[in-house]
Image (cartoon, rainbow, N blue to C red; front, top):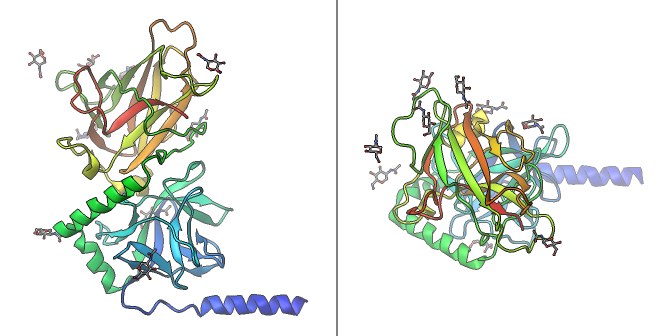
Length: 377
Ligand SMILES: *[C@@H]1O[C@H](CO)[C@@H](O)[C@H](O)[C@H]1NC(C)=O
Ligand SMILES: *[C@@H]1O[C@H](CO)[C@@H](O)[C@H](O)[C@H]1NC(C)=O
Ligand SMILES: *[C@@H]1O[C@H](CO)[C@@H](O)[C@H](O)[C@H]1NC(C)=O
Ligand SMILES: *[C@@H]1O[C@H](CO)[C@@H](O)[C@H](O)[C@H]1NC(C)=O
Ligand SMILES: *[C@@H]1O[C@H](CO)[C@@H](O)[C@H](O)[C@H]1NC(C)=O
Ligand SMILES: *[C@@H]1O[C@H](CO)[C@@H](O)[C@H](O)[C@H]1NC(C)=O
Ligand SMILES: *[C@@H]1O[C@H](CO)[C@@H](O)[C@H](O)[C@H]1NC(C)=O
Ligand SMILES: *[C@@H]1O[C@H](CO)[C@@H](O)[C@H](O)[C@H]1NC(C)=O
Ligand SMILES: *[C@@H]1O[C@H](CO)[C@@H](O)[C@H](O)[C@H]1NC(C)=O
């Protein structure tokens, strides 16, 4: 019995060690995570991709015609519902559309997916290894954002990456995005549980701040303050003021508890409405490498919601991030509306300058970048 098991293990291990690198002349590579966890991407014998541990280094090939990745056994790789884990299975397909971003300042090319900049989450399995997920993963507690850099890539990959500049490529990207949006019109927005789990219906009503002001920063106010422009950086912070009417959320479909979330939305610039200015951002690399981000200090709340004002929040292009949740129900005693204000500050030189949509009576844009109060489903 023992020797049979040993033989089996030996066979499996030897098989793994002899895994051939895919021999077609496409874009093939290995992957390494960059960020708070640095490691090569390994693949275990059930097709899960991991960081850390003793498994074989994974080898991958990207087919740019249909944006699919196969591992070195020819199994399709994807990150799909409900768990959004990065894995490669025989016979299975997923809808994840992979791509490669042109080399960054560090000279590396990065793996991206679904037309977003390519933030993956490394979530600990044990003290030395991590599973890898897409940013759609619901509960990211304990996980850290990482980028996946290409290692040892074939020349065909650079051809893929630099093609990002051409008109043709831009057009096909738009077409793909449209196709995906049409394929899943009711897909809930991404969620993240920094406190309670909250899933947000994309059509849920949203409250934008009614006004914005400079927070206490080392730079004095430069002009009039009723602008929708927000600067979060080392020297600038901002205060977001909300008024939650006692009729919010408008329908009581959630039962007794009406949990609300403060949600930060950061669409990719190409999907912003026409005329909406693109934000300026310290960048994915800075954020992931320096573990930078923002704190949302609850400075004022009629409802005295419990809130962690020192927690670090990281936002990424293409993602909607739940900053925190609180009970927003129509508890008596707020008068006409409940006031809530957050003072948002930069941590470790994170910088983001954007136009908050929906501010004021005559806001030019209702949807776009910024922080909203939304009911959880
Ligand atoms: C990971 O590597 C990057 C770039 O090489 C480095 O800046 C970063 O500090 C490393 N992170 C850790 C946790 O070692
Ligand atoms: C993508 O294209 C390759 C080559 O044409 C094919 O082998 C593979 O099955 C395709 N993948 C999907 C998911 O359609
Ligand atoms: C992008 O395209 C422009 C115009 O065709 C060209 O001048 C520029 O060198 C290209 N940049 C890259 C990185 O390929
Ligand atoms: C603003 O900064 C000054 C000086 O550092 C400090 O005295 C004051 O309490 C701060 N105000 C707020 C609202 O943080
Ligand atoms: C900046 O603007 C805010 C809001 O209008 C005001 O309360 C604050 O006193 C101003 N600070 C300075 C230094 O002018
Ligand atoms: C501030 O607003 C006042 C009145 O709306 C205007 O006269 C003034 O020029 C504005 N100042 C700046 C710096 O924009
Ligand atoms: C930010 O503040 C620091 C220290 O107060 C100062 O040295 C730096 O020049 C400021 N940067 C900008 C862009 O104002
Ligand atoms: C919401 O609905 C639940 C269940 O129907 C009910 O018990 C609760 O009182 C309602 N809350 C409000 C504020 O109407
Ligand atoms: C708030 O968040 C910080 C950073 O994540 C954490 O260290 C701290 O324990 C949290 N505080 C509370 C009261 O949960």
